[in-house]
Length: 392
Ligand SMILES: Cc1cc2nc3c(=O)[nH]c(=O)nc-3n(C[C@H](O)[C@H](O)[C@H](O)COP(=O)(O)OP(=O)(O)OC[C@H]3O[C@@H](n4cnc5c(N)ncnc54)[C@H](O)[C@@H]3O)c2cc1C
Image 1 (tube, helix red, strand yellow):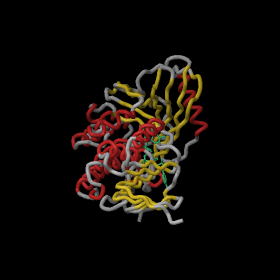
Image 2: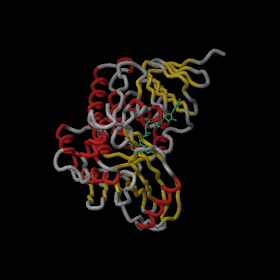
Image 3: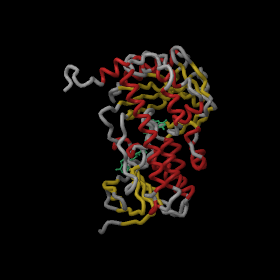
Image 4: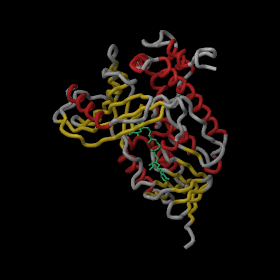
């Protein structure tokens, strides 16, 4: 039998966060388009809890982000050994399950859209995707969003790695707002903190997070640490409902992904993420909001180039911060960098997370008295001058 060929305006390959946001933007704002979304798994979005600051959401994206939100809080806390703050920035989160539900419903309501689940793309080109069953989907615009595994980190790449346990509790949690960073835990191998999201009075997600030189994650040991932390901090554990894990690249440099020809690479693989936090929701929305404003065949123009250039500028700054963090601070001292960061004005914190820093923000983040633990000697030993022993 000849392979089936179907024609669309836009073909999105990979049904994770980035392409789900693109599909949502297009189905909301350009419902006349014929859109296909192809996902290898049987459900969209994998197994994640995605969280974000309200400031990450551009005005045009609110229409399709609002239905996703499962939990929202007016503020969150950070706690360090010598500093604590209630950060009055609204924060929200949603799960893969909700993402799947919302995007599936949007496709069901679109006469032109097609959601293809459980089929892997084996080749992705500028104008078509070849699926494992031999079928071909052609499109004026093809977007490749096949996920973080396709991102190539540089040699200075470090990692944010974490294990999270969603816990049911026997009584009310001792916190009612997120604890974004509880860094009052041992800091032996680099920045480490607990991240707590109280979903309901008796249901929380607790993640043990490490900013580390290596990607390995010792899950059994970390699970024990989370349970110990929970018990020590007044969470009366009833049981573990769900686990999630992540290892996210925090690069020292991000290669620029071409934005002048297809396929357009979206999401983590295309460099659309925050190099310092490993988060990608804000960048996914920025890309979706740009793409939905153009005809699919006219996307490779000045609008996208401008967005990519602004994004690359923000990323270069964050990559420089990453290098500074690792080169100027010993592992157990890196916590002080974040301690200082959370003392900054709310607007600067918000724009930093959204990858929208102004020149003033960028100066404010690094100028002034350096955080405790800053070591010029450590920088110099990481960059020996020519003539030093062993350097030719
Ligand atoms: C556990 C976890 C929690 C995170 N929490 C946050 C958070 O709170 N906030 C935040 O901003 N970021 C968070 N991140 C970081 C980042 O946002 C996610 O990694 C995000 O999912 C990346 O989006 P993506 O679209 O690039 O890739 P993914 O969401 O991983 O999507 C890629 C998709 O492509 C599919 N695929 C792969 N190959 C093929 C193929 N050949 N054919 C068809 N489909 C294919 C995969 O099955 C997958 O569904 C988290 C990451 C993890 C791992």
